[in-house]
Length: 210
Image (cartoon, one colour):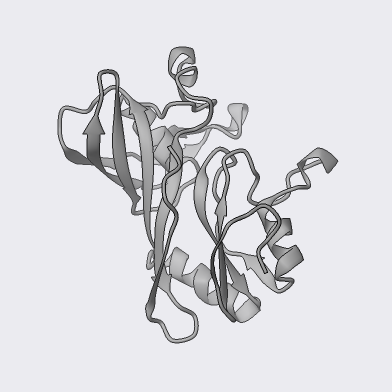
């Protein structure tokens, strides 16, 4: 059974994975107007589905749920122990000179301006992102991103910090870069994680829509 309006990428007795669209919350927000979300739609089709991780509302792509508490716990541990390999695609402002690189910038919540995050060398948590240029255009570049840590807004803040904000980013892009896209151009393209049943790697993929 496919969740309402969500392409089903994988389903078995342990895991459900869907393709979350940009503009949809992963979990319910505060208020009745924020009740619709990926989690509720998935749970309507798979009542035992429990959230394991989240994608920002503007980010599209692979979102995984554990079916039952045992599966959820196993998947959550895999994420916590960094045994979940994630790959994202982003279109950013400007074109990096190098073909690839590594961003090591500690991140912390910008409390007066939540939900914004910020780089903070003193109190930030260690955060690492690997990036690779896939293609360059006159004013933009398409990057593959691999976050080695899972901080909130990590990819968005890291790219903004090195001078290449993501197109369509309402929180971190300057107005002229925000206006270059109708949505946040960040997509969770691939997720590989150990299957709760036997530990074998399971890869779930979603083609990039932009």
